[in-house]
Image (cartoon, helix red, strand yellow):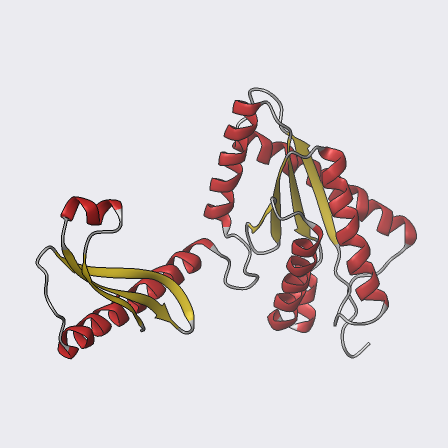
Length: 247
């Protein structure tokens, strides 16, 4: 904690002018090197502050800073997925609900992309859940890199992800999906992943009258169409499931 200022004299701010003559101590609210805000302790009565006054304000400021930091951390934990750092399902649903309301109000475009990690069960069963967790983290990282700053990425379940894309259409969403797929294919080719990661995509665009639940259902149906298509293509090519380490 750092005391910024000790003042005794004529009022300067709007609040100070209302109070007239004033005395105040201003202190930073800082913890772990991060400035969270500032606090002011003031009295209308002119007075000279003692060192004990400064020590008391410093102690109070330190406690407030710690409490603010904990509250901020708890808020973040309540809104994010512990494994990927993406928005968790409740936070993502709030984000897409706000995006739909904004699209309806301002008559703007909105796309929703759903992504499903196709071979997570095989990875978990063959290599263990720690490798499955790594596959989830890798997919989440590539997804986060591919989207715009205005998009919201969320992990909606064990192997399911979503991206809410304001001011975007299906073409924009497919471009993001292609970038993610290309990045993962490169990682698979260069053996930077313990096992190839495969995923399917479903995309829908907002239309007048759709709420976020209807968009979710539409994107989910498109996702399973893509999943069936990819599964059929693998069967035609005679591809085999994930190999075991002993293979």
